[in-house]
Image (tube, rainbow, N blue to C red):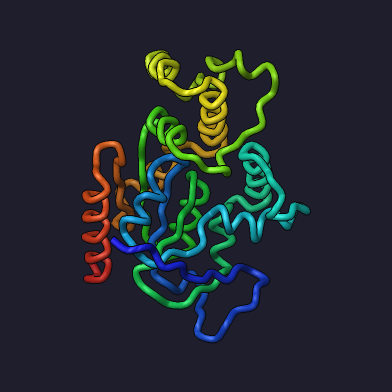
Length: 249
């Protein structure tokens, strides 16, 4: 295992150096999955060259379109609102940005990542040399992983009344049994509410099953249950997937 090499991505409107090619012309592995599904750990384990991730693409391209400085501390809820506005104007979302972006040819090359049926469907059609690695996990598992990591990006402003609204936030996200399990975790209640709000807001913006509906049955897609597989098993399946792509299977 080695640290992933950071590859350069040249977004629409940015200067493109000699030797770069339009992203639609390059074979690309796209990670698909919501927050807490295990993308970061997998990327570190694989060590493949990696393009700037979704967060950076939004910082560099989406936020400035609406007058926001990327250095401004926006919480996840505010960012969701801006990316939702962008998707209303550009249904392909981040995938539309990729369509007009450039990179230097290298393989394997990973992008983290796309979300939801619209983005994935757009990429499936418009980025014909792209392949998709879909990472899946239950909302309860994603919530637990969010609580285990300390990322300043995982912040959502909480109103005064929200501390009494855990059950409302959990509706459509956690089953009653899962909610009881989460309430029993030895974590500060405020932290549980903040991370549950992230999971709930993300589910509101991106249907977790959307990517599967679009990609199921496609030879360009690999589905991985990150609850059932170890990092070693996930990496082995991805390397086999890459080998099949290289063999033209």
